[in-house]
Image (cartoon, rainbow over all chains, first blue to last red; front, side, top):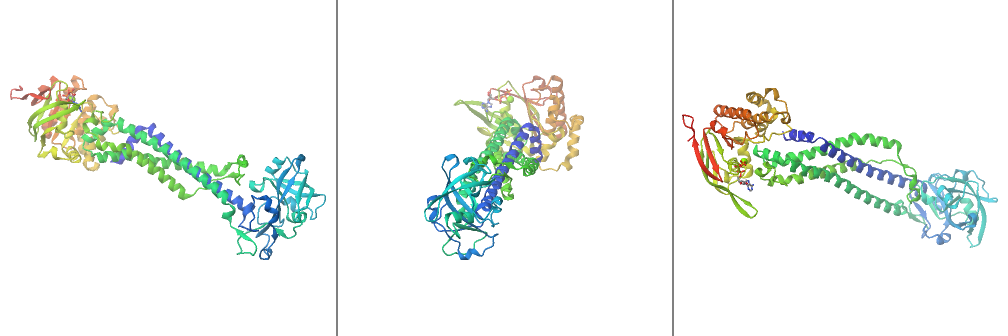
Length: 389
Length: 232
Ligand SMILES: Nc1ncnc2c1ncn2[C@@H]1O[C@H](COP(=O)(O)OP(=O)(O)OP(=O)(O)O)[C@@H](O)[C@H]1O
Ligand SMILES: [Mg+2]
């Protein structure tokens, strides 16, 4: 009976209940959307990091730090025996050195990154290097990422002077030719990086057989003279950034839920205020305060339940549509996140259930809070419409 | 059935005590059909509220059918009203979301009866108050007289011992008032429910069997209808 009454009361409030249902539904959708988008973004960022750079971890020369270029020259070693026999699909040998480009006579410090051109562990757009000559002739073939090319004002076919130091400290210089400007989905292998064949880099720096690190598909146990950097280590900074994002999303979450809560809270206050006479009548007819509170709370709960239905009805088609088109974040390419493509939602069922439950829980609480005072209402005052002013 | 013993009601208004009822003593028998009359502010509503357990006296006590209302909790009073007392209000106070039929059914549902078992009873009552054609209409679609008839049916549907009506005719024109009073008198005779209503309408006098006049919170007179039709 109370359910029937609550339902009819809601219908009577028409526009107001509809608005509450819609606001709550949109908020549920927004929360799930924000969380899932972040999930999708993170998943893609981590995937991109791992397919273009990190793989299953690096065996590195001990002490190497990508942020300390002045030490790169001292931190190279021959490929360790234990890793030599791994197939090209399971390892990528990388040598990192300092260099200086001189586009338009300006000095442009760069990271020279040589990678074994036969490797297929990492997914890098370097095919133009693969078909190049083995020997270095008048120019060294290199590939730049789009961001890098833009910063250095270089395009395909350009030649530019490169200076570097070899193993014995001698400074040498030669022209490099930009064979390709390729889209790199990971800015860390784009900005400031000049890609070349590993054999070329070894040759010009006189470091035959040497590497800075070897990326592997999976760890193969301790390797003498090298230290293993796990995926988590290599992505530590990214993971920290993402954690920060999570926190921001949670703040958004909180605001959205507060918004929905306030709208229901407000409706309920108005309800109790405007319907005092009705409450008084119900009391005169012999309804206990407890039951009246239950009735009004139920109206709020029904709103929340209808909001879930509405959220499903509106949300599912929206999410399906979104997964079809994706979200283009190429404009974010200036940021340090290794994501430059479209991102898609990664909807986690647990999060959906959790978010919905929390939202509904708050709705229920907000429906009940303002109605509590009915318990202390004097029937005569309520009947006169003077109990709450 | 009803004993009102030394009942006083004091309101505190702006730090001052205002005595709305002074030491009222009344005894009301089963099946009474009576009114409280008096000018505005004389305490009629206050007294009805005390009788119905909607409010409690500052001193004295109300004993209804053996129940001492002072000693009962809010919830117990609610149950007492639910089972034994019907209310009729000046402004009808129907539930706006419910149809005529549902409004009249409502007190029975509150008393945990099944709709299927009481449908006929409710419909019979709808017919008795002359609203068969309006059974499915909402209160907003009814005239004042029709609303008050719904309210009467709602008060009576649970076969109460007592019906309290606070100025039931104040919002109605002469003809409708007449109708309503006539109807209440008939129902009083048929159901043996006692009716007490408050009014300052002189026309009511000729319908009632007893008239208690209040003034400034005192009982000014208590007249009973004689066989010749006069109230003395
Ligand atoms: N809640 C209250 N607080 C303060 N004073 C009140 C309250 N309720 C009633 N009174 C006062 O008590 C007196 C009696 O009021 P009551 O409503 O019983 O009069 P009444 O006879 O029903 O008048 P009316 O014919 O206008 O309905 C009035 O002077 C009124 O102002
Ligand atoms: Mg009154």
